[in-house]
Image (cartoon, rainbow, N blue to C red; front, side, top):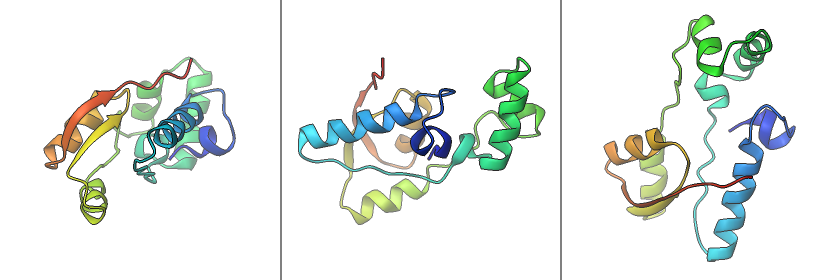
Length: 122
């Protein structure tokens, strides 16, 4: 989830464009699953994300801003994906992501990633 990027079309990220790309890819393939997880701001929540934006306006990057607020660089938790995919009888998948940590996290949960497909938003 990225409320600022997906719904408010923020220019600070390409999250909305990535979501559109993913949905278009699913539509083109005629099948697919979108797991939309409530993990705003790399898991720090919307209010803290706005605070991080203020720090970024002062020159900090995303990781520095999150750490300045007392958070880790990325607090997202993908464990819920295991039960979501099991409910849909999905045990293997082609994953649309630019984030290798998502591949590693899902693999650790026993989900077989047969292919990682980079998302192009430019």
